[in-house]
Length: 405
Ligand SMILES: NC(=O)c1ccc[n+]([C@@H]2O[C@H](COP(=O)([O-])OP(=O)(O)OC[C@H]3O[C@@H](n4cnc5c(N)ncnc54)[C@H](O)[C@@H]3O)[C@@H](O)[C@H]2O)c1
Image (cartoon, rainbow, N blue to C red; front, side, top):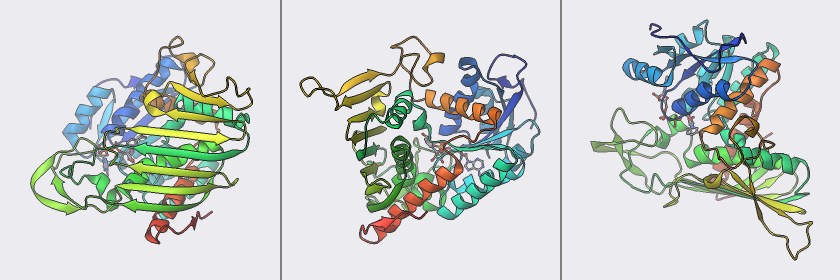
């Protein structure tokens, strides 16, 4: 397909080498990643200049419209053609999980850097293949990263550095919930997210993958075993209209199909250090839209984060006298806070979309420096192993299930 206009160069022409981005998938995450690539070079001083070279989707008219709207120079209808383009240095995968492995492995074999949305894959086996391909490609100077964007909220990034500094001391408890309610209506249609062959799992792989990664990242250590319950509350749903995608689907008249993934997953877990954790991932939490909360309790203090108040971090310093100790609110908008030296004056908060700008920033720096970015495909594989252990435990009446190493 032709090139109707000049590419959107995400940064002013500065003589810096270009980094051509080719993105596969153009709906929810496609729009969020486009925003990230478009904005990053205009906010941050980057060693390379991201160029929105081409976007790929299967519907020619729709992908062309998306390219025009979001500033992509060209549109492709076959991801193989996108990967083969000389102007694409980095392949950004924003499709459902069933295509992550095939696209990522092909892109790495073609010499491209890869950013892949979460969960890394639909199975441990696929994730192992991807991690092996990424390790080989790393030897050739190619970088791979998984899109666990909640690491890139300034407040969670600050929380990570406070844990690493030892502010919490020995960690005892981590408590995480990620709650949505878009499946409460039994008439919500059977989109790809409700079908195992496309999504791998349900709330577990979608929301659970995020909170497993975030908890391990903040704690700075892996989970070693889980005990789990999963449930599918509504087992039959109307079929979706052909053009339906993502969270805003519409029902086609007539016909129902079977839901083959979990609607909710609850599990307790043990960290390598012996700290305990509890996780709740649900699409049936009536009234909760995108509620991600995490609290960490340690011997010297506690930290708590709520995505609905993402410019804030709650901190309790237990070394202070009990008379005036207590949770206090840190407004994470100071220039000294992670990512914030490039944004607005203190108190002028950021939002969800900025996590994708920060994700692009960190990846461009890693590529330019030849330094592997995090979370790596190996990190994504480890999350996949946790998800598999949760499913195994749930199948075996919640028996404690060690996480494979
Ligand atoms: N990081 C986050 O916060 C976050 C949020 C939502 C979704 N996700 C992840 O992003 C990925 C995509 O989810 P989404 O919400 O954007 O889904 P979506 O349904 O909104 O979009 C999926 C896109 O992929 C395209 N697609 C599917 N198969 C394709 C193929 N073989 N070739 C080319 N295009 C193809 C579809 O046409 C569509 O454009 C999933 O892995 C999901 O888990 C991440």
